[in-house]
Length: 284
Image 1 (spheres, rainbow, N blue to C red):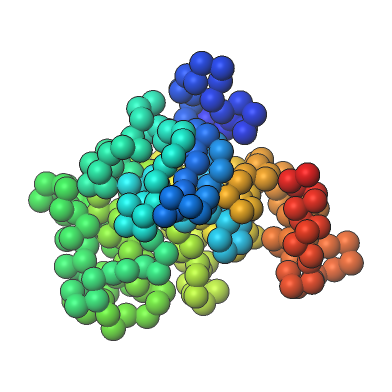
Image 2: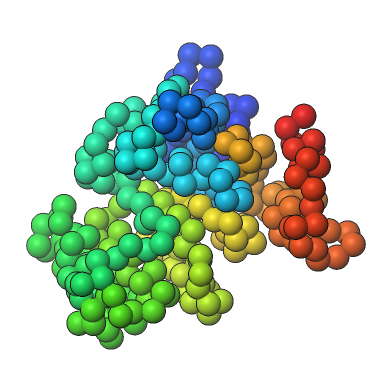
């Protein structure tokens, strides 16, 4: 079982000492784009070792921005951390370059998969293992193929001709080639068929349960994320408005209404929900 997860109220004590139970912490983070647009405001999130933590929220809530900050790639979109810190294994890492973060074990699978389309599946995996020795890369490759047998069957196929689901498998497999300590997945179910989503989520659960890997899962599909997560945070307009165990969030009436599409009156469309009502409940 993962370590206990600090809540928003307990992250970052009076002296700002790191919590020893956390592998990764965002501590009072504020992120601004183009010196004008505040994307993240005073967010604190804790990710314990060996657990799955879900970041939930609608488009534009700030989920992907947090992952970009964690991966050191905010600069590509003129983003800056103006306040707060990101700590990994008790050390400040928000100032490190992306390649150094990967070497330390922080690896992200970005939204949209972004495989190398002109390379084969095998060549894509080789690119993912560039930080490892040849022997380590061979071992990781075998593990990837055991998780995704379809990649083994089509290992000589050009990645650009694969289906969306196969490309998502490859993107995750390429990330696993680095032997990550923490794997961040940005919208892994986006645009995929239900059967493929089932397989992807089976693998995510296996990464935690069998490989003891820590997973930070960013999703709009709240139901799927809460089904396998240990803990969750809900973001709205750059702020954490609700957090708790996955079971607690799934049972919360507001979460059921606004994110799972269920209310006492039955299933409803999110379009039927007034935005001001959500803000009044959580941000007032």
